[in-house]
Image 1 (tube, rainbow, N blue to C red):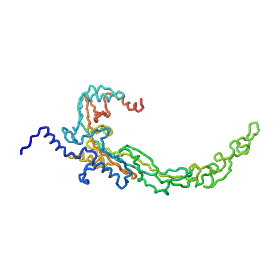
Image 2: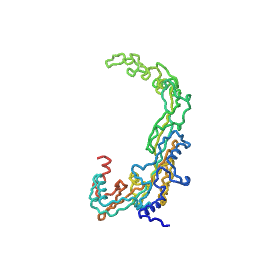
Image 3: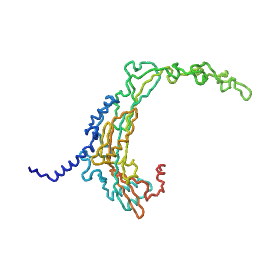
Image 4: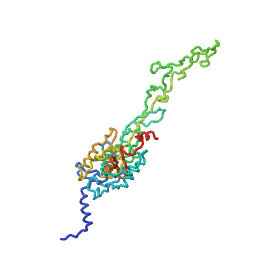
Length: 425
């Protein structure tokens, strides 16, 4: 039976769909990359929420329904789900969405960069010959672990009477039994901290500083007394008349000391010779009210790795981390697993290395969710030459940030620019 002829455009579309079928796990959001343990099944966001809500360390009450499909990072455009790679680039090649820069753009970017530097001349950027333009794209992998940490501290204050919220009412809640849904932040915030009083945790106890008496011996007039003992009405020598009660004058006359009224002794300046001072810890009540406070911290631990070719090895990793690139993978799960790329052993290994460097979780914390991304950042290395001199600089990311390491031929500050910047001259 004859088959209807397909147009060239239709046939090309079918071939393209068949070619991209092997990339079914790349660039998808809201699911975990299939592994052998998952038997090839995607894990939905609802399953992520369920895993975090009903795992042993977490009661269901502490999680708000906040887990959503992961979005691309603000500074990285995501590749479309249905087509992880543009057809004319070839899988995972260095030409993937390469920056097409002509000579005019390259010079304008360098001149703009130099314009923000003190004492740098623009003549090499304007006149030197562009000797070489090299693509050396860089892969950036990140693993963000969003966790919740809880610990208990004790707060005390003077107990001045009244009703206390103790265990006699209802049992005290455990640290992970507190319902903090109203405080739960947006996922992957850098840091948030809140403090919540644990219900039914108040207790009263005797003040240890004054042994429940409300007063402590005066440290001035009873410094040599045994603990718990004191003496009243202790007087000290008058510093004005040195205990004589009289003030001697140069003409040989004496007058009564006004400071001690002629007695030669004065009461203790600290306690008024009472021998006791009110305890500052309990404010004289003799009792303390103690309550437990839950300190809850939400924070994101980040693991970042950069895979750069030798051409871009001199560029600091921080430049690549803040550069705009294209996401090859963006997954979110309770615990992320290495991404799977159908025909790139390098990217599979790179993703595994990022996952293997997962940040350690403190024993007082629990993991809420993880997000794993792999991005490719376009990097162009430009070499300019004039006679026997040359220098190189880099154009990084789709924001086209220029990075010039050390040498630039038209610097007229004799190396003093860093000093001037430090002095803010």
